[in-house]
Image (cartoon, rainbow, N blue to C red; front, side, top):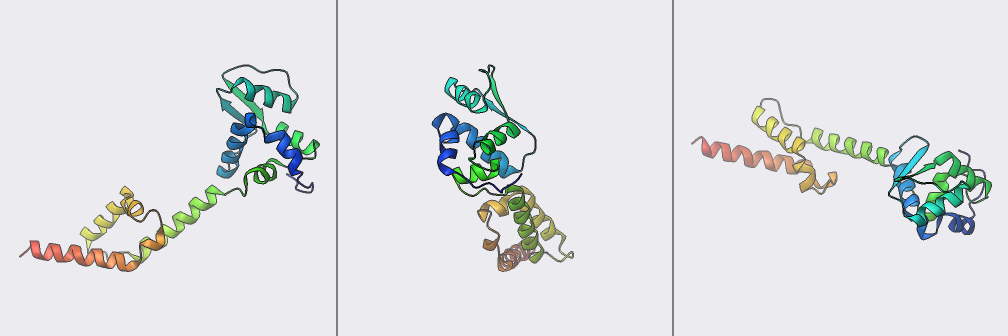
Length: 174
């Protein structure tokens, strides 16, 4: 996809900014942010207005069916040929703001959690604590309690939890 053409926001707004295009633009945004590949986008249960607007934009005869199918390559060509935007990514970003890269964000979050868990690693001579930490992480409890923010789970948190657990076990064994 080439980005050599400038974005004409006014033209882009006329083409994709109408209320009947809202679900299409939202679906495109989600798809682009998720990194989904493929040329076909399907909108389930389109309204008559959505169907007319998309068919008119793509210059095709009225479509029918339970889903509205949109060729992304065809839509991108319409936008490029109209001088509105060089590609879909630029068009959607111009209409709705910067696009996120969700696969990259998920990978960064996974790496951050791996680092947090590595900091809180328990010596293997404490198998009960190892199993307990494993339970906390696999159940998702640690992430939920920290509101998915790795900076809220410092190593001190792990040390405190282990100290408490040891103290409780020592009392129970008396």
